[in-house]
Length: 107
Image (tube, rainbow, N blue to C red; front, side, top):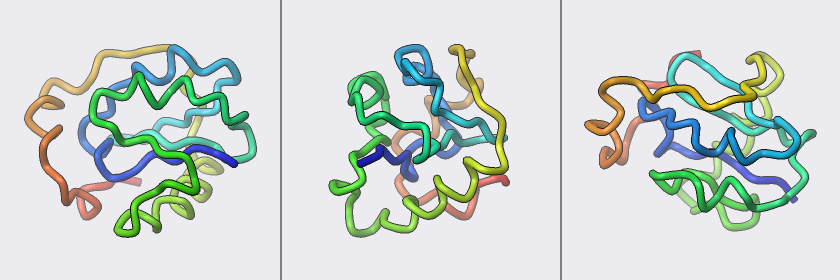
């Protein structure tokens, strides 16, 4: 099983999760992070670190977020690894309570 980053991360892109990942499985896009399912070792460390609760075990992804399983796999192949924490975007706190953000995802 792998972990999946879901919609809550879009436009927030806090990178607390990156700091605790022992295998560097996170990939970074312009305004979103994904987990490479081929690299994730199911350690669970990232889940507790995400301030917007955007990371789920593959089997626990909410029904309305299922498309993020395929999206993580797709974008992980295109985006570069992120291996250390970076500052969040300046407006991240304004976006953390917005629920519907998929249309804002930048590839």
